[in-house]
Image (cartoon, rainbow, N blue to C red):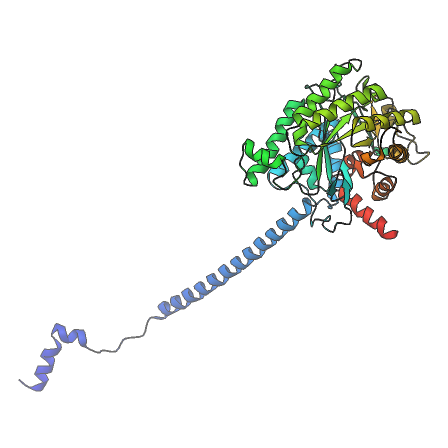
Length: 481
């Protein structure tokens, strides 16, 4: 076999065909174009994906920032919308002022559950420049909310969050009662004033006490003391390091008690039972018990301000407070009317305060009188002029001068004291309420001898930022001195 024949035969075998090294022909142009296009498409897809992710990141971050700053803004008492949007909206949505009040309370309760309730930011009281001492305790500032804002003990924690050092619950009657027929609250927007004749609408002492007890037990649970009676006892006996009423360091909670409408003021024993019943159920959850004998909307109530029955009533309340099952007992105050303003009446009330051992006086309450409009000479709208004829207690800025004068007179009379009472009994505390709308007025009240300035109507018209504003104005007034 020749060499040529051998090679020809070998190439025809399968093995040799597999290892033959024939050169590869180039890929067709269409295939190479498709490959290049796929690579470019993949790159473009990656670019678009990166752009989308970047855009989503920017949008997400922006949304998070907007929500964060929005949350901080809407929950800050200093936000202007509370006064300029929320208050007018409530007035527009609810023609009846009482409906607006109820829905405002419900809103605060709902917002609190989600941590969206308004509150002071940054702890402006931490500097200690507004501290005052009452009943042997130092409170962070001299501003309080008056009774009537939280009648049933539903929002004391939410009210404390907006900045006052003291909140007042009530008035709470011994037994549940509806109060006077509706409508019973009337706005006078041109005067930033109100007329109310609620007549002590109340859920009753037992119902309100159950609500306050639940608040204490929830606090005890969150503090790690348990949810039962032992946890409650730890808090109420002061072992948690907070006042047993407010549950907040440097702040206090007052609970106001009153008699039922159908309890005759002429039956002093029945009257005493109403008030002491309230003390028995509510006293352990309060830092201050307030005895209301000054509402103009309960017939005959103000006759209890006469020295004889008032001394008897206050003595029974003080005795009931001493029986409260708690290591520290609440202070006792009496709330008096601005209309009983003769020196004889003031002296009689002060005598009853000294003789009974009551710790202080709240001056005053709403008035049956109708003050002149502010500013002087202002012509009120016809609708508001007709509302002035409604029965009830009037509250608003027009009350300030009367409140200021009464504080001065009560301060002097209390400091002088009845002759038979030793001055060693201690200086009586005065809270002032009536017409206080700004820091300058609050400071005047404090200079006149009050320890605390309480607000009610100003808060209704100014919104939840009112107390923060008043405190800042007090600081500004102090700097001017």
